[in-house]
Image (cartoon, rainbow, N blue to C red; front, side, top):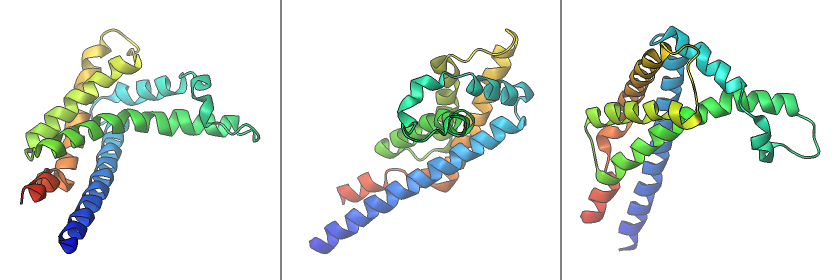
Length: 169
């Protein structure tokens, strides 16, 4: 009995690590595709310009009060961490839903991640530089999300629900 629970515990820990790693790889692929201009050439420059205009005082908790690394911390937050968080959270949400419900179809991950990433520009208040770019922005973000969902499915989405299935046995 102890061996069975130990095996289950190791399965859960391994699965969590696999989900976190594959979410990171999927987010990295989304950032590469989204920022390279492969999907939409204006998307990369517009997102970069937006990330540099964020109010850094809202994130003052990240700063160390005794050291003066204002420029370095601001650059790290605005250029890397904020866009990374924008890409990771929707992918992680779809990954958690897929894992909880045992959804193993590639279409769920591609369409779900595309839809989740399409909601991000509205949630963070991103407005494209010109009004005509709204459609191109959503097409670009949806294609980027579909690629990220497919990457996640290729790595670990095909085994979704493994923990729930092992509990039923």
